[in-house]
Image 1 (cartoon, rainbow, N blue to C red):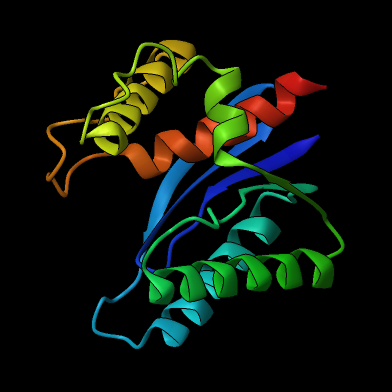
Image 2 (tube, rainbow, N blue to C red):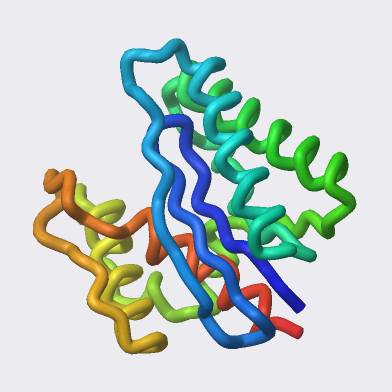
Length: 169
């Protein structure tokens, strides 16, 4: 089965494609940050639809938006993107498989040994995601620092989302 993993965002979405459990390719889609967020969602959907068609994707594995995000604007944007992904999957007749971020991170052991009082949990998880994807698939994804624009955590998250769906079955 051809699966696409997606770590969706309106600014930069990581993606990957698997043929059964073999990672075929991966990348990220960057939207122009000067566009209004709805225009970025439309841009993302067009780019994702091209990839779906190019690789004959049969299943789309996506992360559910986290409902506890404090910023209401971010929450609105992520849920709009999620709905658009569901619409694209439906229109293209492919399976849509959402997964909670806590589910895939827990299944892969990324949540272990993070101090409860840490203020940097997000960057610890992102760095662990890059390291794990590199180990599992012999990759050279980049993690420089929590503020680096060169980090490949969007790609590693997409890979690990799909990996979790594949190995759950």
